[in-house]
Length: 190
Picture (cartoon, rainbow, N blue to C red):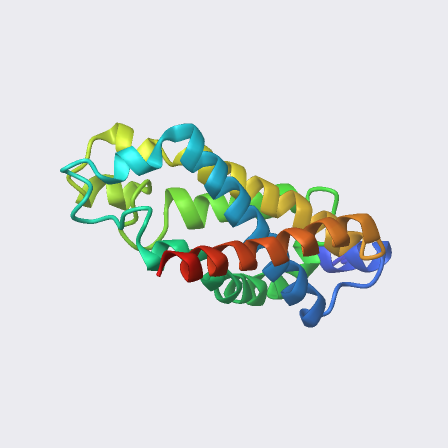
């Protein structure tokens, strides 16, 4: 059997694969920043605050002023660390591969949005189990498709180009702001 074109061999020809520590660091920073930036933009563009206080939605969704919701960006590094474990296991397919970003994005959209194993709002099982109009399930798709696309493109580019200081600085500044803004909001609210 010819193994010269297997994903592991192709990526090995393109350079060394990133270490777990490298993938973890980049995933935590990139996911946290894209989660916050896209979430804020979507909230403003799509009127999430009004949607969350509708009588049919309010009993199951926190208000925008809820301290836990305000603090949600602070929990994203933990989620990102879980993602990083999987990304590391799939590093031969995701990194140093021209289509790595597309593979990652498809994986995130299919397993994380459209067909997760839980009955999640916006996913196929959620559409079956939640008694909400179809439009409510689809309303969050632009946000999650955009966030997962940005995460996929930025993460794979950064992992494949670790010497990119400009991207590193931009994302680190974004990460610091993403952590500081909710902390400031929580401190000034109480």
